[in-house]
Length: 559
Image (cartoon, rainbow, N blue to C red):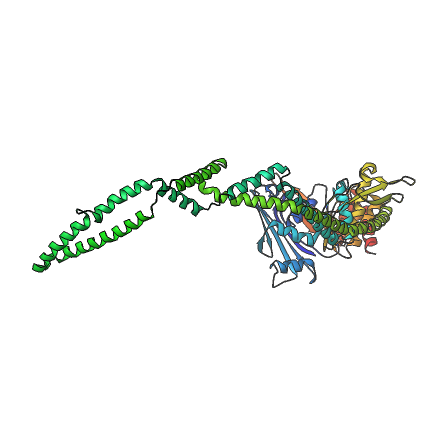
């Protein structure tokens, strides 16, 4: 139940604070006084879109807050606990707050903690149900007609199963299409891919192998030059009489004699010894290197042909030779995926049929539930239309399967409201035969029928009685008062017959000065309600007769 509403600098409201009670509370006032602004403010608390136009001229920001009390087993209490937003001091109380800056930015709070507008909207759907004065216009939309039936039948669980089955069927189709797209539809394209893979793999090439091949080529291509130059180097190191080794041997002998006479030559002698050892090691290494070189023209030809083949294939694929191994792996992966996809198509087609059957299995009970709910809703609305002075009217909720099987999260049924205003006439599509006034009454009958099954604790009706009057208006009021036996009802109305049925009444007034326009709200005592009803009955001049009539209306509603 909404127990308190506080509005600051919202639209033309500078400051309004309301304490609300259980039962049916009526909001009345002159046309244009701002009654619906309070409904708009509550809508903001429930996550409606906000912009700078919501902020009163000259104010820095608008602020709306509301406090609800809930039962311990309420869905909203569980939701708050799951979101860690429960007020530990008052776990069965919720305070919502929305702040809109003059630049249009918006902030939302639940129990003093900042939240997203989406979270506010999710919680709001568990707290309040708003029926607007233009709800009858939505009746022209087929999807709204279907939604009304599903809301009446409480088909959420069945719809969830259908939506999941539809998603699975859609995903199966997507995978099938992807497999067909991956599998080359042109056999020549698949064969060419296979040829490319075989051509690269025939090279038996790795990045390391390419480096070794190029090194072999260098040795084979320059074998004779390497042997000649290496031989000269070997002679200079050791083989000739004037070689470095021979000269170092002579120098070593001289330094040895000097060392016998003076230790000052020891360091030089040691360094020559080290050089002598280094020359010997270099000589050995050079001999080994020269021994490995062979002049082999045939082997050189083979290596050059292989290198030429590698570079030819690399140019063909527009890559460097070193990139061929990686390209081969990628093409192999594409080939395997294409071949696997081809093999998977049959499996995926079977999966589509399985998913389609699952979808049919899910939609069958939903269609059956809709048919049963349609019969009950038709009867309920029929009864309410009779109460609304339309005894001969017939409203039929028709449910039929689509002519062609379609996959939709909402199932495969077509739902149509059909209407006949006069006896002897077969019901036809509501949107084609119902007048504006008839649509208003049908909408009201539907709203009250659905609200009787609503799970929220607060229901708001914003001038849903437009287009009715007299005795019918009193029936509307009684319907709304009946709803108040199971939920808190707030009703914006301009009809005294409806207002008289309320347990409580708040009047909204607008005052205008030279520079400002202000809106005020006042909870009415019994005598004030009588005078307000008298005003609604007779206009500006309130007479004893209208007061007496207003008193009778209040007494009858309380009886």
